[in-house]
Each structure stands twice: as C-alpha cells, then as structure tokens.
Length: 246
Image 1 (cartoon, one colour):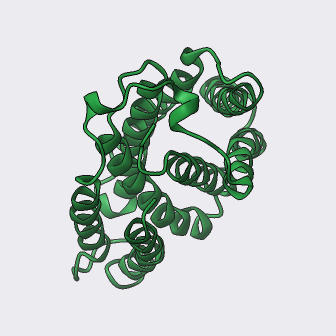
Image 2 (tube, rainbow, N blue to C red):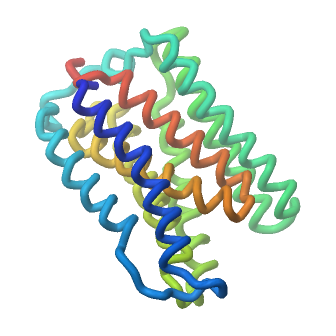
C-alpha cells in the first residue's frame, strides 16, 4: 500500500469508533430512543467511501491482473503474515465464545460451526499458499457463504427493531464483508478486480472498527473477536497485494 493508503486507513480506523461512540452517547436517550443530532458515523462512512474510491483509481483495472493468487498476495512481510494468521485464528475463537454465550443448539450451533469453518478455510489458504503456492480456490468462498447467511439472520433478528441506529453498522459491516470476501476469492479464479477489492476491504475494516464499540458496550465478546479477526485478515491481504503489480 502507498503512504496515502496507510494514512487514510489509520485515520478512519480512529475516526469510525469515535464517531460511533458519539452517536450512541449523544443521539440516544437513556431508554435507547433517538434524540436527534448530527449523523456522526454516516458522515465518516461517506467520507471514507469517497476517499477510498479516489485512492483506488490508481490501482489496475480488472483485466490488468491475471497472475495466480500467490503472485498477487505475497506475504513476504512476517508482521502481515502474523496478522493474517491471528485474524484467521480469531474466527474459531469467536465461534467458541458464541457457543458459550448463546448455547450449543439450533441456529446458533450451525452458525458457530460455519464461522469456525470459515476461519479454518482462511488458515488453510494461508498455509497452503506458503508451502506449495497453490490451494483449492473454493476454500475462499466458505467465508462468503457464511457472511451471506449471517447477514440474513442478523437482518431477521432486527427486523422489528424500530431504531435503526441500534443495528445499522452491523448490517453494513456484514454487507461490506460479503463483498470484500467475494472480491478476494475472485483473485483465486484469476478474475480479480483490484479497485473493487481495495475499496470494499477498506470500508469493511472501517465498519469493523465502528462495530467494535457496539460489541464492547454490549459485552458481545464473540462479535468483538470476529470484528478484529476480519479486520486483521483484510488489512493483511490488502498489504500483501501492494499495488497489485502481480
């Protein structure tokens, strides 16, 4: 990543949680009802989208990158490799915490197992790429499928909630993660779109930072682990790609 990308990422990693905290503190009363006020987080998200779209214009177009996955995402930096592995490990940790807090039955069990499999798939891709330089591309579609299911479940769980402020960051995060994971998997099939992946990844990381505030305040440690894990994975892959010169 260029210096401008790093600075923008750092800026919005700090701005998003601060804006979300102000939104929850200033725009909701003691009963959780909206009191009106500036759209702190939406303003940050719109600014981030504009900035990352502008920065992504310097990246290659879809047809310009046809190299195999291992040549595009080179984990030569040990720190980034460690971050990616840590992110992958945090997903099974999140699944275990989810089982502890929500019980091992029904839909919660299915989603927890699906999340753990997503983390295992990401770790498999990393290990196989480092050892042999190749892996089964379908592995990268496992997290995408999980995220689509989780997005539907989260929407249904909040469908009757009348205060959008309570849950819209989580829905936006899941949607951004769906896109980012799908765009990442596309590189394994040699049809990646650097501009789309970079923008979706940066927006997902920004939303993950904002959602960490919700997870900490609600003491949803499983969600916090998942947010941090997803952010670490996306940041590591974005850094590993450099300017997609592969």
